[in-house]
Structure formats: structure tokens, C-alpha cells
Length: 371
Image (cartoon, helix red, strand yellow):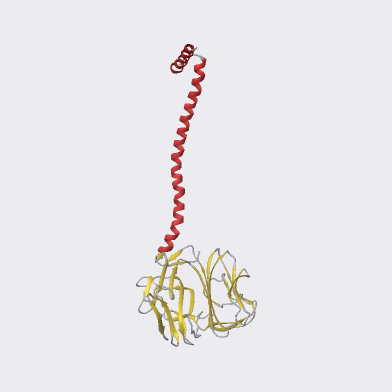
């Protein structure tokens, strides 16, 4: 038995190795070949797809790394960022963005209280971003180096102001806007002002005490932390400045729109002097600046910004105002062609607005189409 078994085993090996012709050897060879071919194909596909997946893994991981690390790096490396209402971001470390967009950040570094008197310009001894030709540290004068539309933002941290002392924004040394009214200030008070102004090359801007003495400004030991000014040249074409020329006090009551009978820069289709309605002539993002010099307001009277005659923002609250008070408001709004903007008394009566003898010096509105 053992000999027969051995002999058969040898014959099987011979048939397998040398390609014997019997059916038994063929039945064993065929599965083995199939298995070998399948293994080779699997190895080839694995090599191809594994080599292609490597770039995919790297590519997918890079955005996650950048997204998680970049915001922290940007936030820590550029602390002074002024976000404009346009898609452009104006950084104080970058003076020129998108051709004509320029930003000048004027601050006082390491200076505390400075008291200014009648006729004096408020100066800033340091400019984070400026050209020597733009800002005169000694005289406190900004000179426009080119024609354009400029956005002016001021922030004054006041540590004292005598009654009757007013602060004004001067253009070419002439009164343009009263930015801080005459009421006395005895405790620290922060006052801000925002305005858009059309300037020609060579025009000057100054911030001046125009009456009385004793305007004390606190600048702070940190760079521009308490009082500062930014002057931003905008890359825009559409600008509407609405003012009342030679009109003093006008009283508005519930449901009435606040009107301006003079438009320094406007199209007839944009502003309706009779109804006090601004109509957008095209889709876009609009910057809205309002400044109301109030000579009286009864308790319960609110002033609102209306879009398409519907309440959008309450801009002056209901508290009574008995003495001259300047209230400013700034907002960015997306408008479609044909949308309307109005400033309306939405409750109460007796809202007294002082416009001033100079064009728009006390109360005024500007609409600026940013994009």
C-alpha cells in the first residue's frame, strides 16, 4: 500500500511540474493559475490607487491647517484693523488698497490730557499711517493729496469741557460741521463723529475749538486707545450730501419726514426735497451718515430710519432733550434699485432741529454708495 501511494504521489508531482496530460493534473493547475492572476491584479490596483490618494490626503489637509492657524496669526499681527463697509478692509498698516483707497490713522502716543482753547487746532503727534505731505503734526492740518471722496471718523475722549465750547470740523479753515456742541462736560465722556466729504487736491481739514476755552482731551498711554482720527479716501463715485441752507429751527411731529431743502451733491432723481425721501437709483451697499443738532425734544419722541416706509432702525431714543444736543448716526444698508430711505418721527411730537446758517454746519445727512 505504501509503495503504491508513493508512486502515485510522484506521478502527481510530475504531472504538475511537467504538464502531464491527465485530467487530474489539469484540474489542479487551473485554480492555481486563476489565484495567481487575481493576486497580481489586486497588487496592481492597490499600487495605482494608493499612489493617487496621497495627493488627495495632502490637499485636503492643507486647507484645514491654514484655516485653523491663519485667523490667529492675522489677529495677533495686525491689531489695528478698520473694517470698512465695503468688501475692502482698510488696515492701518496698509496705506493703499485697491488703487485710490487710502487710510490715514492719526493718534497721540503716550500723551494723556491736553487742553485746547478757542482758535486752536486739535493736534496728533503721531500718525500710524500717513504721508508727510498729508498730515502736519505741528499745525494739526490734513491736506488732501488728490481729488476724491473722504470718510472722516473722529473719537474724542473728553476729560472736561467748559460751557459754550464747541468743536468743529473745518474745511479750508472755514466752518463745515459742528461735531461737539456747547454743553459743559464735567466727567469723562467719549464723543464720536463720522462724515463723508468731497475734497479737492490741496483742501485742508482741521479739528478746531471755535468758541470759548477749556476743551480737555485724553489720548491715553496706549497708541490711539482713547482719542484718534481716521481719514479714508474711498474709491467711489456716488455721493449725496443733504443739507439745509440758511434755515435755523424746524419742528417736526409724529409721522413727518425730516427734510433737507438743499443737496450739495445729488441727482434730482435721488432726493425729493418736498417729501424728504431718498430713492436708490441702483442696487448696492450704501453708507448712511446722519447728524442732528437738536434744540429740543419732548419725552416719548423717537426718530427712526425707515426703509420703504417701514421701521428699520431707531436712531434717537424717546428721552426728553431740553438743551442743544448733537446726535450722530452711521449705518451701512443693502438697497435695491427703487428702495427708499426716510428719517421720520415715529412717536411723539416736538422734535426741534437746528440746521444753522452755514450750509449743513449743524444738521446734515450723507448717502454714499460704496459698491
